[in-house]
Length: 205
Length: 205
DNA sequence: TAGATTGTTAATCGATTAACAATC
DNA sequence: TAGATTGTTAATCGATTAACAATC
Image (cartoon, rainbow over all chains, first blue to last red; front, side, top):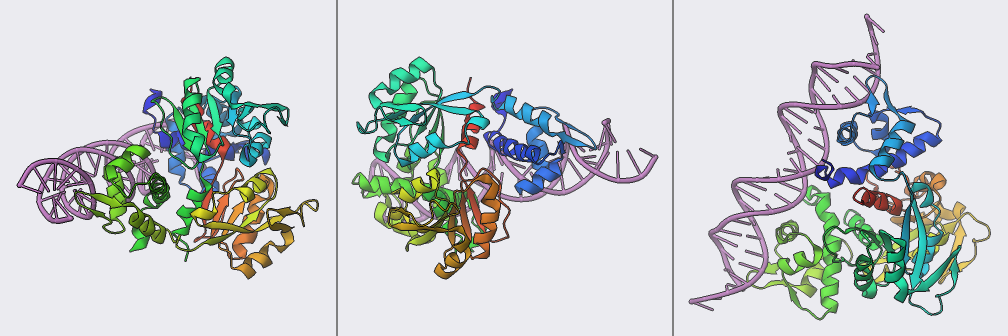
């Protein structure tokens, strides 16, 4: 049953997928748990154990067929179709995210952008027009959007989270440096660069 | 001995510090492991255990003095002085990072920015002038910079990492979606929003 | 004092690793 | 076949939690 697979295992699958894509770009057709392990700096046993939660994907003596394993991982992570994403916040960070080219070939497309600044509403970022924040709930519901990226000031992040969840969002990528409170069943991932830096300074001389 | 404290514990300290700052802004002077736990969605036992690695900071029956605990955590994480940071890459993301206001009050200041695009070299982002990438090694060495943020295309990320490490950098915040290979003693933290999104789609219907 | 909360221990729980039979 | 690598088991390792004496 899928729900008993450790979350920490799920979190590594995108990293495996990313490295497989690189190997593929390098022209390789076959890889092994050892090759992946060396490139990712983890143990080959862990890679084999992680994959074995989902089925046998390799061949003894040979390794893994890269295109096949990529396909399988994409299926597991539900990346066999593109996910529409709502972006809340059109400041510097929001605009950088909207222009970032790395989402599409990995399964995501920003389809709506919101801000509460009258100077930004109506303007275009790429080919998407920034909408008023008051339309968030209606638009997300109408578009049946399940994923939102929050790139607003800390002071409004919780209210925005409440709004998007009410509208049906079930996965939030939160760039505001604050722990959000949401109902059960809603997933949140946090991106807080300052926290990452603070984690590393502990080890600096 | 500091080196035996689990890295996963170190990684939670910035989150505790962040929440303590919020409590402080709300005007509170005292908190408890229970209050912190509820706000962060983790167990109070974990918070007390984590803190106990570094010393007794609380008072039985009362809890923790917020200003005091903040000071102690800052000392532990070496945040009692400001860290100069080199930013490599002045594209959309680099510019958003350079303008991000959230670094300074958490212990970091971007003091140099590099790019290899002649159209960007010499231009200003805030009050910092973008320098040519060929100056990276010399400038980082001269400034004795220990922390770098990498916001360059995937194809050049490893080469940039090699360069900054050669120049003396010991902590890298990497925004390129690639696992970097560096010598022992160099810390890396990864920020890959697409990977975070892929982690969450596993759970979506 | 009575009530509350810490710091710490021991138990539990979960994740990683080593090892190897199976087999390509 | 000989060599290599998977998938899986069992052992090890590490992290989390429950519980409570100490004490403010």
